[in-house]
Image (cartoon, rainbow, N blue to C red):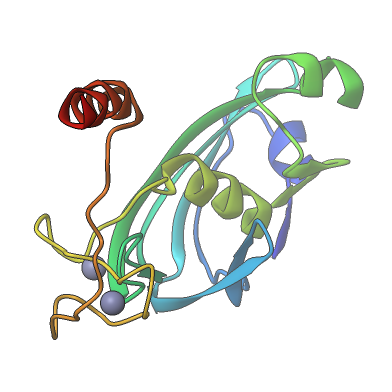
Length: 175
Ligand SMILES: [Zn+2]
Ligand SMILES: [Zn+2]
């Protein structure tokens, strides 16, 4: 959803509070598409700071359906989104983009709420997620979920640094 900031910016001391829906249907990232388990509207406060500057504050709670990094089981991941962004319209769009923060959620004089939320999800997106600290994962050989059953595969993993010692040991045996 786009929210026009031009009226706020041209009215002195103007503060606008609004509850806006998040139109984002899914969270797309690295070729994957994740569903929302929960998605609320966003509580926004936009303040005219004067001198063509606007403060955007907002927050919402949402949950994404993600997957365990080891066994691929679905894991509901709650996120608390909270933003506070100062936008300086004295700068050009290019200057604002260079200005540390990616401000691609500002289009002209409009705020793109969905892009703002998308960026925040991206920042908080877990690189690794486990259904449980003790998750045993999936057997690399037969694909069995090792939390549910055991398999007969030999999954002993050798530390490559150990193989040198093993070779020495084997050579020693042959003597
Ligand atoms: Zn797991
Ligand atoms: Zn197996």
